[in-house]
Length: 131
Image (cartoon, rainbow, N blue to C red; front, top):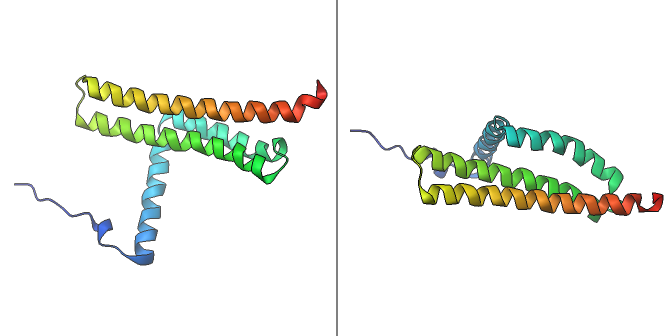
């Protein structure tokens, strides 16, 4: 008979809980870097985030530019988590599994479109004086 183990994180308190939670978050980022889509988006973020300080003229603009990039990364991680949970259930095809994966993919697409819209608008405003 298998023994059920209690989640130790639920018993931790204070700074000990924060330190362990941070470690789990770092493990999640490492796992994300194993996913090709997240890795590509992370590389793009490495370019866009520094570029946002040139494109944006106020702290609000810079924050929107950076925030939209982080939004894509966040949604991609959540989508990967959904896909992993569905894959754990089993490899067989099921309507609800497909629907869950499609919804996660749609969320990533919308976050990318939002990011592109913000960046294209900011770039247009920045470069419109050259036209």
